[in-house]
Amino acid sequence: MVEGVGRGEGSGTLTLAGLPIGNAGDAPPRLLRALEGARVIAAEDTRRLRQFASRAGVRLGGEEGARVVSYYDANESRRTDDLMADLRGGTDVLVVTDAGMPGVSDPGYRLTAACAEEDIPVTSIPGPSAVTTALVVSGLPTDRFCFEGFPPRKGLAGYLEELAAERRTMVFFESPHRIAATLEAMARAFGADRRAAVCRELTKTYEQVRRGGLGELSAWAAEGVRGEISVVVEGARSRPDQVGSADLVASVAALEDEGVRRKEAIGRVAKETGVPKRRVYDLVHGVTSD
Image (cartoon, rainbow, N blue to C red):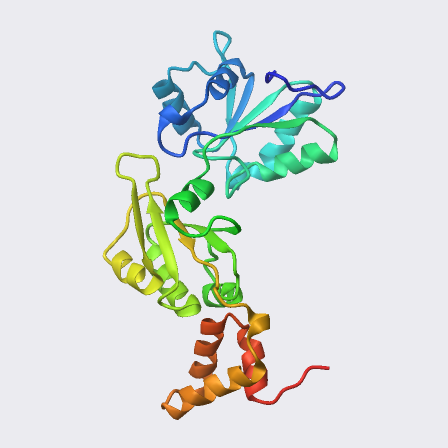
């Protein structure tokens, strides 16, 4: 059982353990003790867990050994039922993912929610997080931020357009083969000059943090980027409620006078001001709301 955690009546305790995001040396002593003392370990990738344990000099489950089961996206629903049966029967369960905290863009949420419904104790062994690590090295504001996870594969443009007015710093995850297209879409939705940072291989040997405008970063990524990637994007600077309606209409008109098509002009003004595109459209076309 995890140190300092009370047991629910007759049930085991679920422990969500954060594994290092790259450097095995970041593993806290409490995590290593939990791995050695665990009876059941649910791992996103059992092979990677055993590799980590070998590097850290840990024997999973100690002398008795632990029952290690896979727990990933494809089997999360079915495996949650099995793990809940263990917990109801009084067996403690330790959940780990490939890196970082379970439940943060990784399996863990369903099991935690199921435990909460049945008042089964849930605790955590805190560990490194790619979200906060990328945030603090980005050089962008950290006082208010939001985590958006992996951008959707479909409807990316609309999804990013909805975030164009978000004033908090935004943190995203992205895969190497999609990062160039995503940065290009962000440059269109947020503006090419919006500040951002691409953080790759954090805490690892080839760690890199590339900072600049989204347009510049998009061009850089087109050459190919490898490794685990987090993207930090500056929030919108202007406050939509401080931009006057007349100013918005005038800005669109000025762009039209320069030969910019109305649809594009509305989009540009929305990006520059942080005002939702729909509101700018309605103002330009004289649409009033009840």
